[in-house]
Image 1 (cartoon, rainbow, N blue to C red):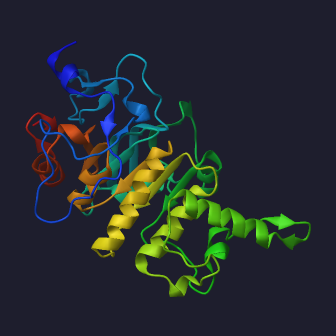
Image 2: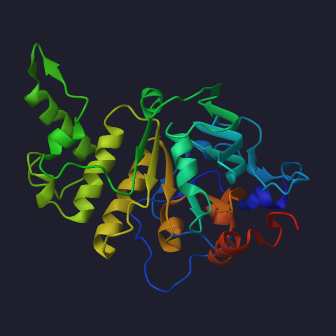
Image 3: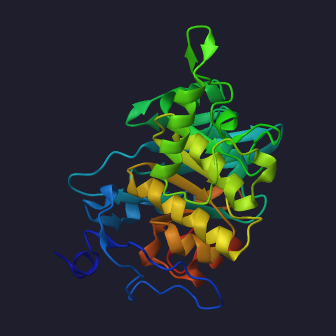
Length: 320
């Protein structure tokens, strides 16, 4: 065992931790991350290492490759290209998401985050590359194909109907029936069970109209809808972008619970405090290229900002 392996714990600490806000920067790689009771991440059963082989002559980003008894990523994209006319939006993207982990996808505006999410969710088919889900190569022709695999995307606009109640929004387009009638009692019970499983205690009734809910509660309903259907991968696009401090903390705690239940979670965020609070890995996009995908504990706030703004930070990122 080398020095780095000795430093890297097999289980990351978590629990009922306080999520950081304010000016304090997250700890660097040599400092312990905040936490309480031990949480074992499914994808951390094998130590990871960063190898020079993962950088190609084309200037590709370094990738983490598990060693030994590696856990198969739920999502594994390799060599993904996407262009719109003459504009090349994604170039040779390599991106993975592991079960039981939150992977934060970060990048400046125009870096390609939204396009990559739409490729993941079946909205835009990639022009080139390999898309693997649970180790099997797949081709997605529509968001319905993605949903059938267990991929759910919570977009920034939430796509909730304000004139409908919580139950109606959760089952919109996927209503349960009992004979020719809707199974209202069954849907209500499943809605309560789902919200309870996410430790949501702020909803007075599952028959509340969406128009009466706060921003944080609406985000919670959108997340609950995503995990209601036996999801394996949940993608959250800026879930706390328009929320206050208290509501943001509530949403981030739910994000962490999704991973703790074994789901692979992809979190898109511009807020570095949120990223370092809940993520296990950070994937940084720069001008359509994946410049790094690293463990959160092994990078600092400053390094991630440098990767976002210039595509390189020390030995991480694109080769000059």
